Length: 178
Image (cartoon, rainbow, N blue to C red; front, top):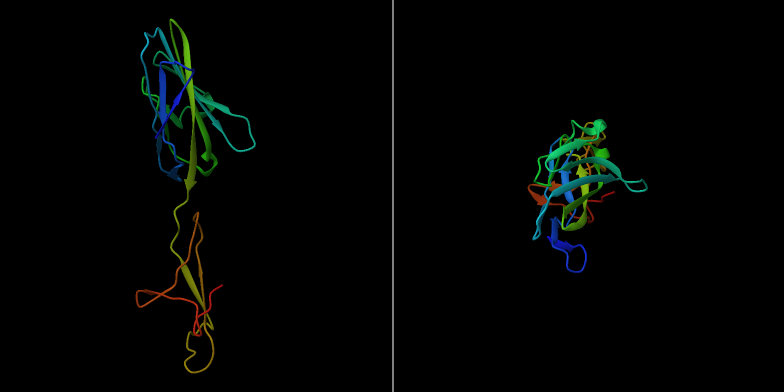
């Protein structure tokens, strides 16, 4: 975690995860935010924005003194339970990948503000792989080569690893990979 201090002697501290948050498509995701300040507050405002790359930030929801004001377009998707500034996204879609910006304003003897950005990546679970053999009979003993083709229908950041009898196969005179 890292801290962001607004102003030189600001009394508002806003803490968010410092690394990219990975969520799973179709599942809920919680963006955890902590804030504290050492001033008396007459009003506390929390604002959440969302930005995809190459697009302007869009208002998601906000609250003033624990009264939540959602964007009507997203009101069923995003949840904020003030005074907690954490945002819940449910369900998560691929289109939710991007940056979420949280801003906290505290008005008391003047206004102090702090904002932070949280990067969200959405992962799609890998489906069960299918393997095709060529020739389809699979019988090539003492004759020629056999090609095994492995594919998956869905999944992000897919990597393939061939095993034989529980041990990794490496390229050599008997095996080539493409």
